[in-house]
Image (cartoon, rainbow, N blue to C red; front, side, top):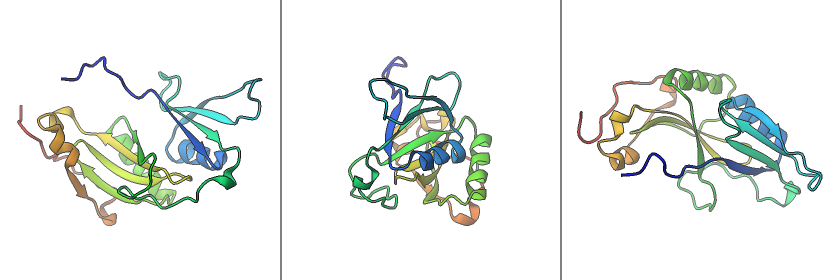
Length: 180
């Protein structure tokens, strides 16, 4: 059994083509707060910004402007099972089902392109793409009793949600493995 004191991912840094476009996506669309900006006499030309989802964290991720965006490969449409090496997607978890549904409504109102909406066995999710082509999963975590009986089965489970039901969410969760 994994210890609750085990390692975790502390933060992520993404190099981006256009830091203003990425700031608008992560701050405006997803709701992260810019909590800092890198300032260094040693590296005065670095444009790096830090973001967090909660004031209890120093930062969750950072964006750094590519010094020469023209040398970057072209942005390709997000493809979960494509052949591109690198970050497949980043999962952004909202604190409750209600907060997640409100975020989905904002995403729809802002006409952000959605690649996939579906329900996993441990999360309910919506997949987007940031301005640099990184996949972004917007989710809320289901209660632990839903997936803890068979984590593998919950991780492998997926139910597609069609566009016409984008803002609907069924709380009659499938329970995996033994039931307590």
